[in-house]
Length: 259
Image (cartoon, rainbow, N blue to C red):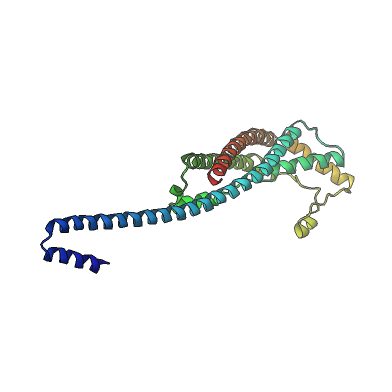
């Protein structure tokens, strides 16, 4: 093609037709420019198409993570409400006298002391930021909400760390002085990971365990720990609600971007 154009130019010059030569040259430049622009346009279109495919992949990944977060938040909400209920209950509980009352107290102690944490499913967001591909998400609203959600998750983690410190100081360390899980068969728990209640103990053993439970219920440090458990878990539940609101808004925005 280039040699063809060159022959035409040479022919025009040999015939001393300078004006036509100049017009032809300008036309040739325009033709090449248009070809380059078309090629760039095609390249941009193809790049945008590939970016859109990758953006869609990330948006669907964010959807999956957000759905998993809702499931996790639901479980953790149930757990934290149970801790609050149990803490309020034991603070009003009288010292046990029977094995049934002792079992009830022990069950509430266990509800408070089992430790659970919410772990956000943010793998897709981490991949977006670490790879530098966050710019592929065109919606500024989605990007802003993702950042806000990360901040809420960081605040939740901070409050949970504070709560753990309270548990260590006011509950776990203090309860080391008491026998607070005496009615669970340790052999079955250790070998099969099953909770089996012990329902038959001697009167002497019952009297000793009731005394231990009374000591726990009347211990000022432990009672302060239960109060802090109520306070901090209630605050965390409020953060879970904020998380859910952002999650729902993100789901709506992502849905509108995908369809």
